[in-house]
Picture 1 (cartoon, rainbow, N blue to C red):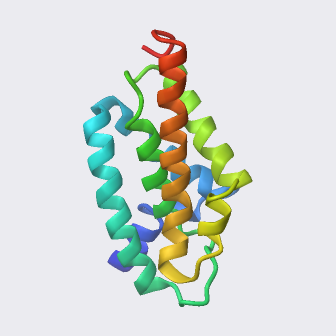
Picture 2 (picture 1 turned 120 degrees about the vertical axis):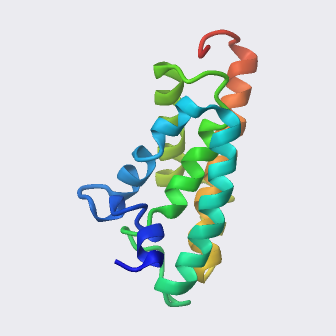
Length: 148
């Protein structure tokens, strides 16, 4: 496995079935225990490495293949970075929110998903992560203490 494929599949998680995007999101969940700053930092690293990997393993005309899950990892980490504490209810809510946004793809996620090449492959899940993080932050403001 080349370094680009290792990044693209998040160490092979993208090859798991069914639902490689779900596996790509699940594989980063333990990072919630490291705290928000680590989640944010790793999200940035995976986003940059994922973009590089996409330019290496995908053709500019290729749509987002199921096995490419670096984008899911980066997006999921962005939502985890918004958690006030690494509790099971918080991690579950972050996961469910991110996966729902990634699957349903409301605007502007759907717009980003339609963009060509590595940019589009990475951007839709980054936006889903940012929107999920904003939703999680709003939830914790409206209902303080529930996810602590």
